[in-house]
Length: 64
Image (cartoon, rainbow, N blue to C red; front, side, top):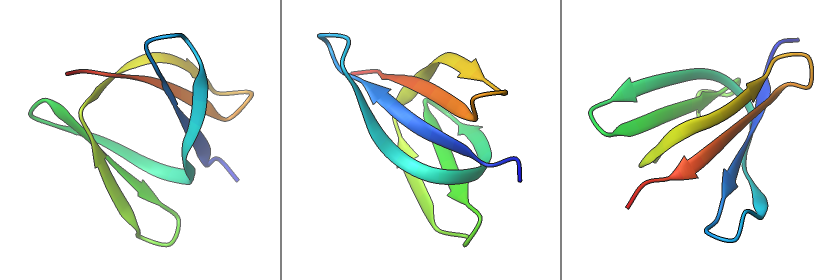
């Protein structure tokens, strides 16, 4: 499977798991719409900080 887990980084640099098994990431304006393998969606105002395909990780940094 090729899903990725998405983490959010806070101002102190700490990563928190935000959404598991993400299958699709779509930029919509200033937001990112994340969709998992069960078609559940979350929207977050963030930018991509890092993507590690082998580790199946996306790290996002919140934008205020």
